Amino acid sequence: MNAAPILAAAAVAVAVVCCAAAPAAEKAALPVRAKYLVLDGRVVERADNARLAVGAVSKHRANPLFGEDKPWEPRFDNLYANVLHDAGEKLYKCWYSPFIVDKAVTRTPREKWAQVPYRPRGREMGVCYAVSTDGLKWRKPELGLVEFDGGKANNLVVRGPHGAGVFKDPRDADPARRYKMFYKGRGMCVRFSADGLRWGEEIRCAEIDARGDTHNNAFWWGERGKYVGITRLWAGQRLVGRTESADFRRWTKAVEVLRGDKENQTYAMPVFRHAGVWLGLAMIFRPRPNRVHCELTWSPDTVKWHRIDKGVPLIANSPKRGDYDWGCAYAAASPVVLDGEIRLYYGASNGTHNGWRDGFLALATLRPDGFAGYEPAEASKPAAVVTRPVLCSGRTVRITADARGGTVRVSLLDAGGKAVAAGGPIRDDVTDAPVKLRGGADLTGRRVRLKFELTKAKLYAFAFGD
Image 1 (cartoon, rainbow, N blue to C red):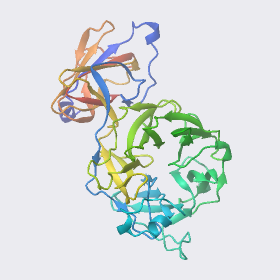
Image 2 (image 1 turned 45 degrees about the vertical axis):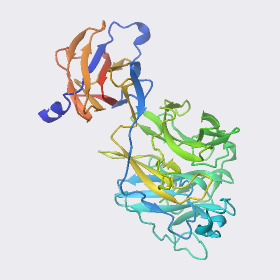
Image 3 (image 1 turned 120 degrees about the vertical axis):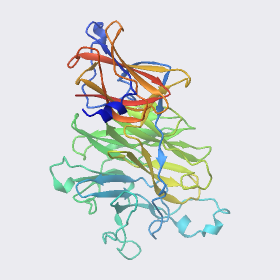
Image 4 (image 1 turned 90 degrees about the horizontal axis):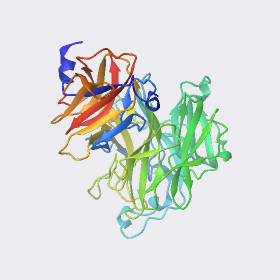
């Protein structure tokens, strides 16, 4: 191990608590993972003067990335983007859902918007396709696949679907089903495609029995051998619904899995897997200001959901009226996780949800594993976070934390709480930084607890290493 990462990690203290003599009720260790996110409520056993807070996103200076610049894009509304970084093709792909027909927009001159309330009429949604080599500069190719206004020189892949969730499914043995679409058509429906561009016929899935007028999304859950679909239900307000399927054709009836309240409604929730945890990007619709922002949720099983830092946006609206995302921010499905950052693409609009507005694709970024972390609840005092028992699978602990201007302190404790080793402190922002524990016995293969002491710092994740 070279000295640089050790020095970079010299500002973190991890307390590992041996569980050999712990009561029987405490002996059930967490499943072994490559990395543990502390936002996962199954990981942390005790938090003293510590609060779980969402991470800080940075909105990209290139925003907005693209807007409504085609005749078949009169109104993006919520965009409902699905962005995939296809590493094999070295290409970013985006499927998005504008209203390709909106007579209120096309027949009302912009100069009259301030005088005439927006009332949607004669609308039709479609699915469009865009590509990029860097995820910033996007191109809308003329695909020649779908007729619009007498011609096919457009980037449409299909007309009709509302709120289509699109994903690539490399595990499916049938190449004709490589890409999958989950959406509202005549009720809830699915389609299949070999290339994401040429789509098969609509397959109705009436058994789902959901309203579905949202950003629908679906994904494969390998451990359970099933697909899960996330959609919308309605009971006097917008609710998040869940359905599942073994073959992507026959589904269960959708059931409610998350709701807000009438003043903070759960409008949509793309779901994805990250470091062994299911995370959701919940769009919160606030009827009184008529605006939408994005909050963070987590789940152990895609059924029971927990809101993190409730009421605090992960992707917030701009405070400046008229900015590209002042009115609404709708997260795209499945963030793009790169080595140095997490990319959260989102649909943005400069006006209110039910008003006149211009729509765009935009980008916010997070530090690695930076969805949420623990920090001192009272900033002037240190905090302590203690994990549940976990199997120690290496001689060092690797941590991800923001500690510049503060410290994350590490100590090794025995079953009685006595410090027997130490490795810190760290005083910098670090990602997967190794902290070699000194002064104690090798606990590899034994159940341990980790204790993190935070002073003006934020802890996101930990792992074991050699």
